[in-house]
Image 1 (cartoon, rainbow, N blue to C red):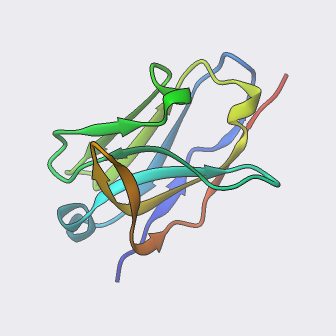
Image 2: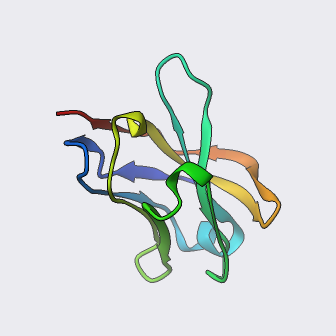
Length: 123
């Protein structure tokens, strides 16, 4: 059973920071690359970032490069998304999921998702 649980969302002012966490199991981290996605109301889901199983490669959406950092802690069985310099357009529900993460891009693998965590960037 693959389970993913996001946490860390909230309300933050423009320019602020948040760190999202995706808690899962060791077996999931050993098997899958993990990605972060977001979906704003009335908009399509966007791929944000992904990290491969052995932590040797990360991939980012162009609009978050230099602001967001994805990382993983294989001891705590968590994947993080550090978000800095947040903008109102970053407002969305953020999800982690199991993915294929390659230099050519990321895509969902086996369709395992967390329940999402709301991020709101507003003054």
